[in-house]
Length: 43
Image (tube, rainbow, N blue to C red; front, side, top):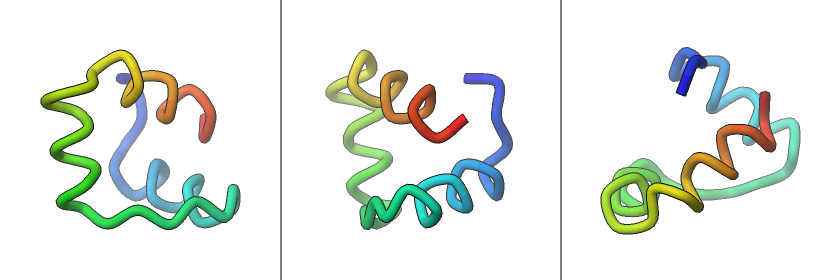
């Protein structure tokens, strides 16, 4: 999705979005469109 993991996690923290790695991985697998929206939100 064009962003490094560290920048992604930093963006989540800045946006006050609390989500753990397991939930992120499951979201990427089962809801790829939602995961892409999340990535675009923190870019």
